[in-house]
Image (cartoon, rainbow, N blue to C red):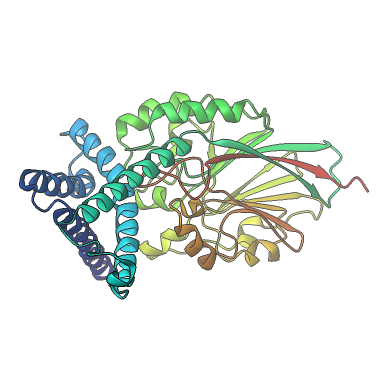
Length: 389
């Protein structure tokens, strides 16, 4: 049943993917009417671009790694361009349809924006230029993450320290598009915060990452520094590729990956990491938070790393003080963030239910298109202060 559902999903996906690209090619063909050679070049370029990413995912890594990498990078950029080109062309066609309902003669015009007309060609050219501009700005935005800082008061008395500094980064997606140079930058930024704890709530490694990249990334991950611990939980992409414990394995335990597990620090800090919801696709079930937590003192600090921010009431019920999640990318491509608002109780930012604090990060990287137009990538620093009363 699951394989049948997956085949059905792929069929629908590629059908839509093909129709969208046909629509783009068709609009370009009509805009370039009369310029036969340019028409053919445009059609070939778009056809090759739309095939790049699927081919890159299908080709074996070890046999033709460089070719695969080039296809994935160019194809990923095209995914972003395709999204916005399709969106802008659709809006353009809607406007043209509305214009057709108006009598041009009443405005002293002899013709509208019809295929082959200079106005049609100019409009398409402007749309293409604006699309490339949006993608370029979105890419620049994606490679310059910011540091966001929040101060949170916890209503618990912790005698061993006055405050905690916790750095959070999610959804780097190290792999075909996000490279080692980005990882080096992120590690340096996190270390500059001098955190007591570092939380990495999932998708730090993409399913398209190569064995060579994992090997080269290991010494970079080892440079992460925290006074107490560096803790990660698996994301859906690490789950899909059977790499749930990847960061722990390549760092020799320098980074602890908690997959339905907990760790305790100083007898008053409990950190819980859940497996990702994606394990359901393998017929597996993850443990409940209460079962992982076990017996805990009321005065203990309880932290939860859970990649996908669904069912936030579970953390509240379990008495968690702070849950950190990612996954949503805040929509990544505007206006998809408005869809995200409908899917999640909280799709991005700081949130509170009862005594439980939540932070859903938009991530420090991108997935698919190396473009972020819905938010700015982030590393979050929490300064936790405690009620001494």
